[in-house]
Amino acid sequence: MKTPTPHNAATILRTKREEISALVETVKADAQTIRTKISQLRTRREKLMTSPMSKSEFLRLACGWVDKQANEGAQRLARSFTGGDSLRNGGATLERTRQGDGVKIPGILTNGQYGMATVMTDEAAYLFLREGIKQALTGPVAELIKWPYTDTIDDVDAALAEVEAIDNELEQLGAELAGLVELGESYGATI
Image (cartoon, rainbow, N blue to C red; front, side, top):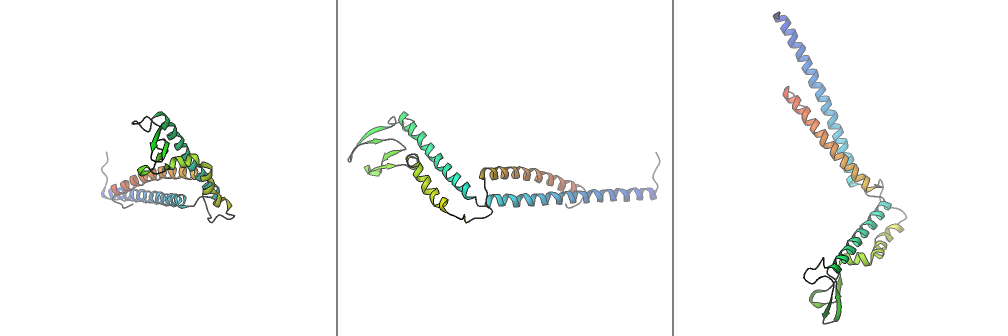
């Protein structure tokens, strides 16, 4: 093997230094591209999380929430008759109070504190008054001719799915950026 001359060694080192400098500049450019993408994704995520929903989406979600509460009330009522909510007394019972005979359905209809009048739980209210509650929630909104918000989200479920996808992409980009920073540091460069 031929021993490099001092002139050839200097040329080789200069060439390697230029190659390393070019590599560092490429890594810096790649890192900047990733940082820009991360910034754009964070901006989009923030917009999705803070934008108001459309009128139709509000009405859909409000009614869905009432239905969910009512369905939970129905399940609780069914458990009441099978003793699932009251191991001590076996479920729904007749009860004698100072006001007279009544029905006690644990978790749905109970005597109020100190034997006061019968109290309906929130779950029971949604179950028994489902349509009235929906109308009370949605009626005033449905009657609005102009929705007070602009630039609204029409599908909250799709927006939340997009936020999840953004979060996954942000995690991946963060790992890529960390790898580039580590590579740059291994060459003595700040990325």
